Image (cartoon, rainbow, N blue to C red; front, side, top):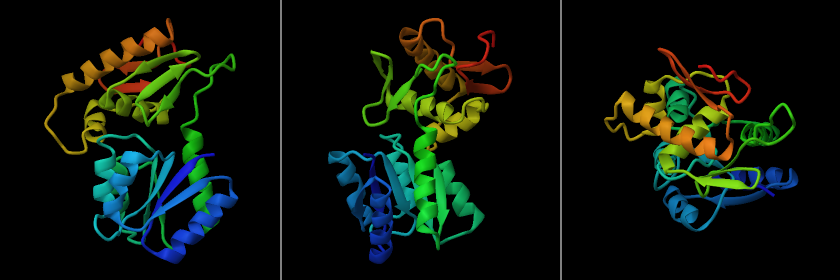
Length: 228
């Protein structure tokens, strides 16, 4: 049963969200103050976070940025502010999706299911699971084998893994992986990719998962030819 953390200060709405999620087979938890989120995550595990933008104590965008520094847990932003800049900023900070208030509780449940479904293990053409990502421990598994990644390596892999086939430029990866906007170079991304490829090769020998696209960047594609 997936644990869903609801961070929402409107009590009636939070309770309604929790009821619908529970009826859909999830295990919801509710927090109503932004200052309680990081301490809660320090001692508890969540499979997905529904994170309101406007919160007492600490706002959702700041929390999203803070969470991404140590966790790749899926985040769906919930907001009544429909300006395009807010939507884009939420996603730029590493959110996986957003829902605009007012919304249908059924739509909310559907979005939760869709995000979790996107993060399920990719399946090979032979029906075997290639990778399983563990965002709580920054580990990846393939069959009985397991490897531990650094936080940056895990963020990099999950960013590519969530959208197989999409090409991410080095600049885009730097923006997503370093939301604090620290100064890093293209070579930093290349170095992380090199180390990540080595760990993936130990789990899946002969299987090229991260492909370099000359002059463009990198993409995750377990079905592609390995001659990139």
